[in-house]
Length: 182
Image (cartoon, rainbow, N blue to C red):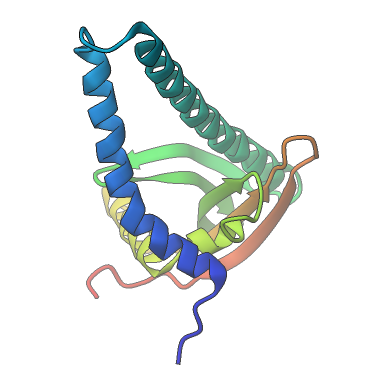
């Protein structure tokens, strides 16, 4: 028996709405590109709206980068880990941080949010994301010849309100490393 939390319901609704939203934005961008027949007032409004949307997306990307830097500093200073990789890109994804904790390789997923409106940041690491992290970690280990190495997946969840200091939570071994062949 599963209980759908409000955050789960919002996430499910967003999955259905976002693709249509992206189609609308693309249509508006194309309309603006060939906007000879539109009144100037409409063209200016449309351009202003699309520019604001781009800025908002750029700010979100900046928030994620700030969160990763904060997480790396926390792991180094408070947990005594050695950071060995930032934004390690592999075939079909990216590992946010790689760290060494004693003799264990730690794959760190960093989730940063402005608020808990869409749920706690750690909730974004669902089963699909855990599977992807495990596959990326195995891919990295094979690529570096470290298949016998012990490893784990940690999550660093950061809530960073606009006018307040960030709240950082570190979940050690937050999810079980999955067998990539399952």
